[in-house]
Amino acid sequence: MQKVRTALIAGASGLVGGHLLRLLLTSERYSQVISIGRHDLPLIHPKLEQQVVDFENIKSYAATLAVDDVFCCLGTTIKKAGSKEIFYKVDHNYVVQLAQSTAKKGAAQFLVVSAMGADSGSLVFYNKVKGEMERDVQQQPFNAVHIFRPSLLLGEREEQRTGEEFASKVMTPLSKLMIGPLEKYKPIEAETVANAMLAAATLEKPGVNIYPSDKIADLGKAH
Image (cartoon, rainbow, N blue to C red; front, side, top):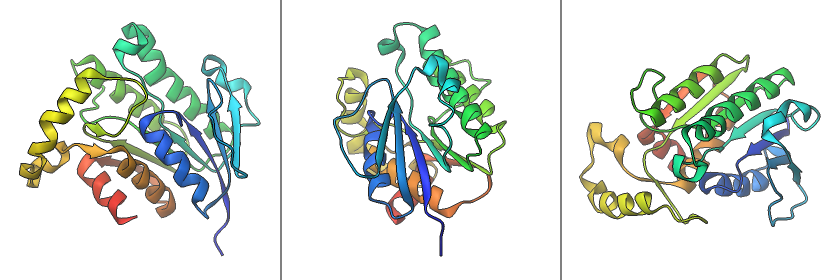
């Protein structure tokens, strides 16, 4: 009989995180789901525990961080953050500090949303930050690290992102033409990414596992 586990999710108010939280709450794999964020979500569920945390001082929430699987959907945009420095803090520092803290508390798996093109050596700031985050997360002593690199995310966002909405309108009609090596560039539904994250956690594949967007689609649709 499979052990019933506990999960922690960071970033449940976001596009992927919102779908993922609902999946975790309905999954028989988890008896408890802890959601951490800057504010409570308007959701009540018998399996859900919400913790308002200060990500600047995440290490101080030691008791909350003692879980089996950690799902990290933290992320912002440079426009929303207001500066490159704040963007780096959210998309790199907060993620890596969460990984460090949960690894110390014995978490087995860390599953994180990154981005297509992530590369610590990139000259593109966004891709470089995502790549450095991936590099530093991989250094933590988890049994498994799962990194998801989706292409353009589709779904209803709370905040308006004009650039992404425009890209979606342009790319979605072209997606049927993206076959073979181009499949990883297809826009992908946020719900599919969430499904893939839960599927990967269930597989419990050890080591570092990186999923480009086409592999995310395969895994998410199969779950």
